Image (tube, rainbow, N blue to C red):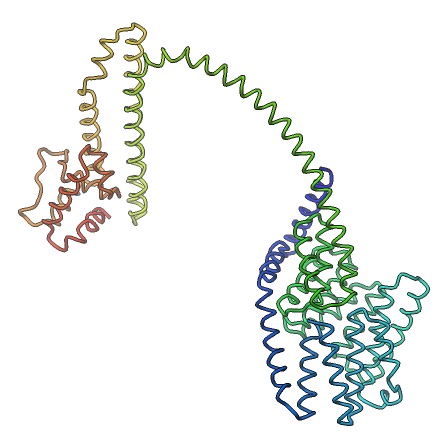
Length: 557
């Protein structure tokens, strides 16, 4: 539980830091998750390019063309499958030698040594470099590549070496060859030069200085490219040196995302990110990422990445096992608590059953009055709902703000008055029923609840209140309504201030209640009757009967 609390605190801290810096790490992780889900598509794109080069290679008999195709295949396989990259750069060496092109052959040997270094085959890389004629190299354009390959090899040896004496020697050799790169005619704007300077500043513990060179490199690469992934990974290292956890996690995620989108199987950034997430306590995501990196490493087929990933997998597995044990202990505690709750529930059910029997007789005596009260309450609830919907429809359809406010205020006042009126009426009814129940005067109670006069009186009062309210809000409605009808179809009201059924139906439509079933419920008619009323009125329309109701809803606007 303590570990879970610490993990949650770390995640919260990183979230706050990220938001403060304008970086949403969770959103970046989601982008990476989506890209991982589309890995097959990215792999198919790379495989399609590889198949195109292989097809062309199979039909070509020109050594120069074969060399170019084999070199293109090497570049495709370089970050994808190490053994295939080694195979095709080896063919390039053979073709260059056959053409008598020593400079190209040496260039390919240097690329072979670099590939071996990337794959963790340090002994093989050293053998390839020792086989080169250093005098011939120094006299060719490959001198800079020669120094950078040696610097890269000794840098890797120094980084992964566990023997302090050897590590110091490797680092010295790395610095020596790194310094020679600048003597090989390299431009200060060249990415290789900028990377060398960035690594120098990083090795000196100057994170700010390293970032200045990284900023220049970042401007020269296209976002999402393989080169962008490399620059992003170095930025991750620079920000880690500065202790900026949010920026470092952002850039290692960008590097991993670019690798996935380019079907790069040498997933160094992914396992670094998995390490960070495991430290943050995000075990599930760390496991998914390290499992993906493991699959990529198997495709890339190098011992180096497998050796790096294995400890992370082991640590994640140990964390999963610890989490499982905690979950089992929690489950056991929940089983005990559940058993106690079940026993308590049994006692409660037994007690409730006995109380239910005692209350059954009282419930039967009050059932008639309760049904009546429920019916009246339902009517009041329906009326409340209808009035609320009418108020909402009026508010939405009235475009004139002043008129809308006037209608709203008037309508709310009348609604409150109506609610208060029916609450008082219900309370009087409750008192009468309660008095009859207390006196056990069941005959009087039966007569009282069987008489429909109260219902008819309430409905009459409701319609009177509705008519009065509606005509107060829309005093010219009847005239405007008749203006939409032919003279012979116009309605005549029985008395001033009241509406007949025809007009009430369209008054409700004006208020936004268009459904025939709801109108029938309010007016206590059948749906068919309401439909017939509507059809009869629309048949008498002056214009198009299909737009008649829309014209009615526009009255008073």
